Length: 198
Image (cartoon, rainbow, N blue to C red; front, side, top):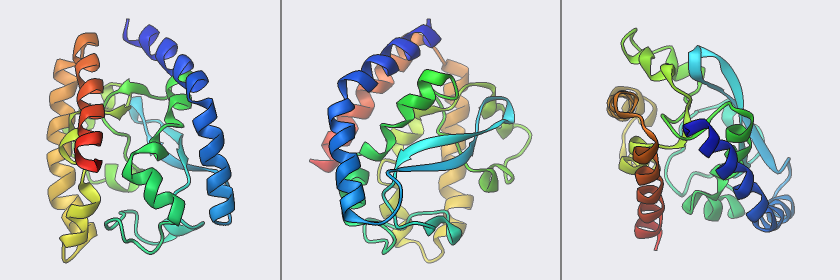
């Protein structure tokens, strides 16, 4: 049921949101040099790599340095990127990943290999399920960038504090995964976005 829901919801979402996709694509192209989409390698179910779709919100080659984004004033973020990141619109193209089966609408957020290499064997059980666009950790850390902005060493703080808390929530999700729980989390995510960005 979960996979059928993913296919139907992502397919309908891509059709309904296509006008918004077009507007955002034009804005991104006019705002800065580079492609509309940003495709980064993430780690998915079964410890397999895949390329995630996102609207590009940063200057090209910004990931050649730090992999963490530091607050809303990170100089690498474009003008259009600031807006689309604020309302999580950069994540919408991941509906493509959901449709093709790399991801689910709900599941642990896919991490880059650099950070997965820090995981313990027990933490690797996060990869027993498909990664998702949202999950309990996404809601809990919806202001993650602002937390990193306050840290003396953002990279270290992410690895030792935020990532560890997120993995605990990921593992709790893996234990509780279910269709109706996913529906609940989708509505909680929408509510959290508008509450914190309103």
